[in-house]
Image (cartoon, rainbow, N blue to C red; front, side, top):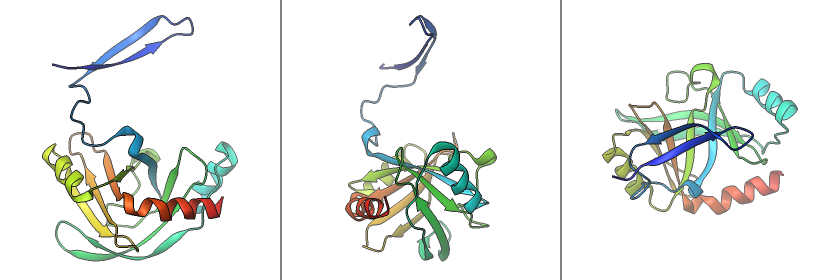
Length: 178
């Protein structure tokens, strides 16, 4: 059985702690290099943007907002979503809270989701579901590119799969806002 380890070293390079985790990334579902943002859902949008700017040097694109049709497990709905992406990397997405939906802040303002580019959103979502993830929402972007939100019941982590078709237009948008 393959395992991988996380090793913590002190300043002299001596091992402080080594922890092995499950099966190695052979046959992984998603690739680390396809991770492109961390999403944080917040209660106070403007204060969060100001704090990340003043304390950590983040700069932001214009806000993307409006009604977004989504497919939820029980029904279709239209959700009023608003978010901004950082032009600074590592890339952050700050999302306005949408009460009563999956777009609620996590405890203590922790990361809400990890965003990945996907060459095949349906296939990647199905594979994550095969590994126990639960599909919370799907939608089509303005250019028709699919998006999917899935959550791991075991860890609570969410993954947002974004079609690679949307990559060029998003990267152009980030560049225009820089």
